[in-house]
Length: 368
Image 1 (cartoon, rainbow, N blue to C red):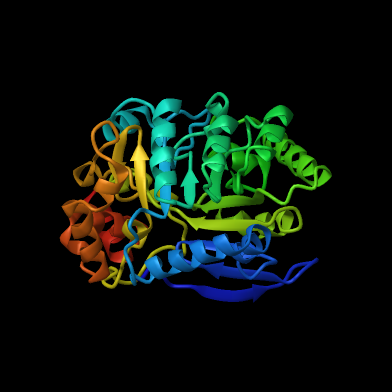
Image 2: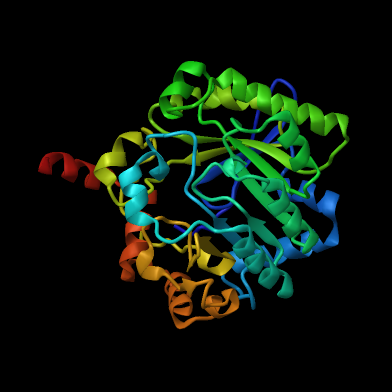
């Protein structure tokens, strides 16, 4: 299944016509804009448009840029929630799959400085964590903004976003912010967001942010909410979309992907409509053409947690540019461009987790 696939449908809303689209087949986006990037082009201008054109070419495997277009910084593994479908909710798995020291502000600046040298346009200072547990997070964002990164994005759970920090974020230069909620009702929220504060308090934090943004006439960051669709919350998708559509710029409904290869542990979270009839054979991953992931101090070609064998080096002794052009990275790109993902075990395991088959599920049940 080609990750460049884009679908476009129109759905009804009580207020506006809502566009639905997907750029990777895993995440469905809902917006009154045809594409949120069109809104950002209107706000930021020509340089953002050119960056997205290059991004689209990379997604079509038409070019390999001299430097990654996106730096995904998984700076630590700290979270105040213990969501059962997330790796950070399991201390054992976190220790098993994550290595190295948390990324310091000095390490962050080193990465950003190299990116700025090569004109890198996009960055996220957040991975499998709650970014607002980082003290002075707005200073990280503002440092990248001052280094001319034009698409700085952040996901968070909304629990730690006080009014003071909301104002700091609005003034930081952040391009996109998304609140990961995964539920419409408080009852479901407490089940899928274990250890959370009450949903009403999270909503209040988001509303405070939106009010400050409106009162200050801030065009950025564009604001969204996300919903990871699992079996335990799938009945609330429509209500979630209808509730948030008038309030935010974009709504994202994401298919669940197990964070590790322990599929037996995570299989209960697959939504009922997620299973494929047959194993995917034509998948091509675009991540090695878009980005590098820096997890603590280590450099990886993609965002999966179980890719130690694909490690490209460390920022302590390897430049991002060298990692991007390394033989291992080139080999991974060539495999995916040719549709031969299954020749790499990590890639094959990842695809099988993204697109589970009914047959494989039945086999495991019978074996047990």
